[in-house]
Length: 98
Length: 367
Image (tube, rainbow over all chains, first blue to last red; front, side, top):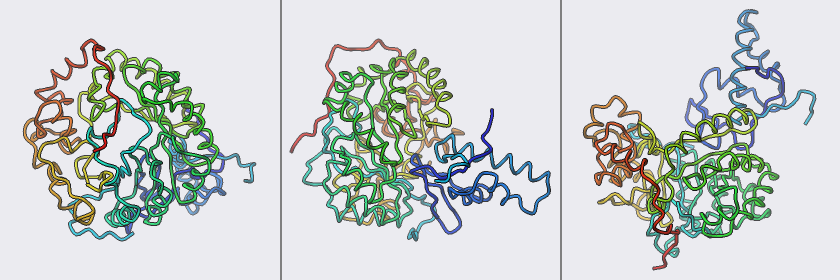
């Protein structure tokens, strides 16, 4: 399966982050919610409609070695694509400015 | 939103279904509303609903599903949406689209509506109108266009049963052309009016099997563009559904006159008494009422549920279905292959369709 590793992700309409408890965030989506903890929450927190996937990966991998960076990149791209397949994220081309 | 729960063993009512009214311009033969709907003059007022939304949010509710009847039949719908958003809820509206104008939609979006779920009855107009008991199909297609243009999150819900399942592929193509982010294929659930019409609606085993292949192909084709969701009809499953996430575990339903129920159908179970938010606070009803506690957890179970390894996965399935099909709400859901009534259910699904009687249309009797 080919995965899109480029583009600018943003939350799709009807999807928003909300703090649901003292230590827990959830991504509210039309059919329910995705509870986000740890890395998942860190990744989605960086999705702002401006940062590209590469920029998000760079921010998450800062300070780790090159081997770790490759693995993190794969994980992040996989995770973001899963959310895209569920219509939770939309990817825009990096050339676009809107 | 601060939680004000006292008993930490009681889970949160994450979802609240608000049946704002039983008034509806449609008369669908598979409506999940009860057969006896009571009088529209008993409906909760704008203030009563607004207060209820605040209380529910305080008990930990996240999602609010506005339904009915037709929510748009409430003239105060925009105010209700604003009140729910003010309480911090995520707001989904389940609608036929009848009564929705572009202007009304823009007011609802501005008030904080998060998502719209529009139902389709068929791909063929005459058939769609026949199942709905009114000419609504063409209007729905028109409404879908301005819903899509508004940019709000949009799901098209396609209701399927024996009389239209053979047109599933064309129905998905039609749904896709309306431009939603999600398409939900919803098999009729046999409660309320649908149970009255079950002989006309229950799909054949072959239809269900064929539809699975078709759905898998469609899912693949739509991947990354439209999220296709579907659930198989539970009469054909080996294990029961975890109905409403388990009785009194995730979901509460409030009917138009303010009674709090664990699901759409619970009133059919003999001996149920439902407290009203007109008399008691929502948090008290959720935690302490007899209705919410009657089948909460696993203590009520008898065999084969009691010793089953899945008892905390599906909680014995659906209590209402157990009562409807076995006459005893404490039995295992007959969908389960361990249920003594399971063979009778399988027999039912293998029967030849009976078209001798006419379908019954949903009507709200005025009392």
